Length: 414
Image (cartoon, rainbow, N blue to C red; front, top):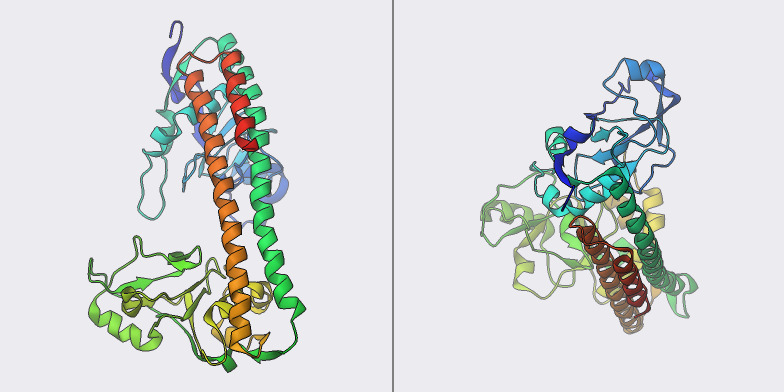
């Protein structure tokens, strides 16, 4: 592209990481200087920071004060490339790279340019438990840079196109939220209205056993066929074996004596992201599966309670169970609280099955709607990427952007 130059971010701007004043020094905190962590980089412009530091905290730490208009880029645990432009003078932590404004560079142009190369940049992340971008990699991001006037022209066109797409995205997200809330409302109505013939019970009254997984670790053995699942493997109402840990037969047999998973057992995550539920399926893997302590296993007495009804009841009463649960850094559902949890249920298993079937049907319709809305969100985000691709290959015009924005309206209307 004529007049454009390929430059690294470090060549066109000053780029530095931040720092964190010692939390043990109270005089460093609750001052008048905004201080951001990477989790707060969620929108184009920053909002009020969650923390404030003092001038003393700034001066006696690696934190740096950057001016309003600076670009902040998240470096740690970068599942998504998080960026925001400062709406005020502020400091930030070591998980953020700050890019100072430059009179020849429009940092909104830089933000858009980086987003156009997002996949390529994220491929440079390194780390085992947590994928990070180093400061040097941030500085070495290569960007096509035109004249300042051309940067501003492109930013104006992209802003205009994104306005319509972002509106469509917001509407779709609202519809997705409404769908989820509709199911929660229906679920709660079932368990709060309580029909005739409902009786109060504790979970321990209707389950043969309520336990959790191993309080310790097991030895890994690839392709052993014996699975050691944790809370992360309970998702979307089922057990997810993709990437699940496999362990030695000896360790499995030792832990299995505690859990003895069988088809129809009800599972609920009791630490970390608590409240995700599933039912053990009729599957040969079920008999070769055990759990870490982050999953509780309920063995329903099928003469007293239907497994699906039990799972829906746990979902409906989760908030009150969490309210009485204990935890320090994170909430936990304690086994003793699960066992004595009181709830109402129809006295007959036949009626429980009928209600569970209605909930299944309603849940499937909500999941169908969610799938549609998620597809629309993906399509809208692809439209944004297509605009960015055109912008940084010299193909973007106002007419092109308007055509894409019109397509966004058609996507949301479909």
